[in-house]
Length: 309
Ligand code: HSE
Image (tube, rainbow, N blue to C red; front, top):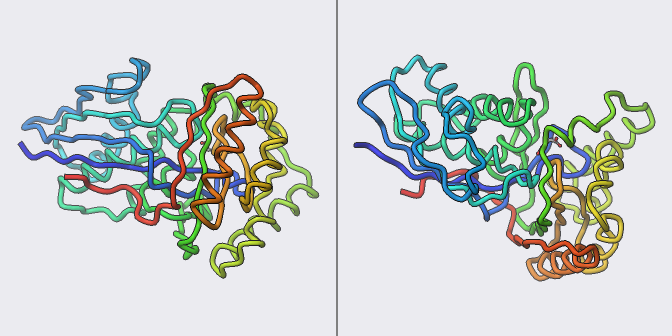
C-alpha cells in the first residue's frame, strides 16, 4: 500500500501586532502524520499518539481527518486513506497544535496524489480543520505551517496569503507553561470592536514589522512587536507576563509577546545565543509563579511542512 510520513512545524500566530493575519513557523517541534492509501473510499483516523487520549478518533472531528476530507472532496477524488497522527505539540498551547496536524496531513495526501495543489491552495483545507478545532477558520497558523517563514493573510475572502521575503536571521524562543488554554475560550474574551486610536497603533506596528523583516532592520522589528488589541486582555491569563517582556529584552531579545492565543509566550532574537538566554529568563519568571515550562528555541523555519519518507 502507498504510504508517506509528513512533518508540519509549530507556528507563532499574530506575532504581536498581526492578529489573525500574521504568523511564522519554527523548525521544531512539530506534528507527524502517516498516511496510507486504502482500496476503498473511507477516510479513517487509525491512531493518535502523544495526546493523552484527548483528541477525537473520528476523522470528521480530528483536524488531520477534516483537512484530508476537505481536500479530497474539493478535488472530487474518491480515495480512502488511513491516518496515523503523532502529536508532539502540546494541546491548547498557542503553538499551532491543531494547525500542524492538519498541515502535515495535507502535505501527505497531496504527495500521495502527485501534488496537484500548491502549498497556498492547501491553506483553505487546513482552515476547515481550524474551524472544527476552535470554531474559527483563521489562517495565521496553518499558512506558515504549510508554507514556512513569515506569512501574511492579507484577505480572507477571497483568501490571499503572501509569504514575506523576511530575513533568514531570526531565532525564536518559545516558552510553554504547563497550563492549557483553549483558543476558543481565549477568543471569546476579546472585544468585538476596536477604537480608532488602537487601529492606528496596530496598523503602524504591522507596517513597521513588514518593513523591518524585509529590510532587514532589527531595531524596527523590535519596536513593532507590540499588540494593543488582544494582548492587554489575554495577558491576564499568563502569570508574570509584564515582567517577562522586560527580562526577555534585557537578555537580548528584540521583542516578546503571546504566541497565538497563549499561554505559550515567544521572543524573537538576532542570534541563537540571545534566543536561549531570553528563553531561560522567561522560564525563571514562570518559576516565580510556581509554573513549570518547556523551552523550544529554534531558527525561524523557511521550509514549512515536508515529507519525511
Ligand atoms: N490568531 C489566532 C488567535 C491564533 O489569536 O486567536 C490562534 O492560535
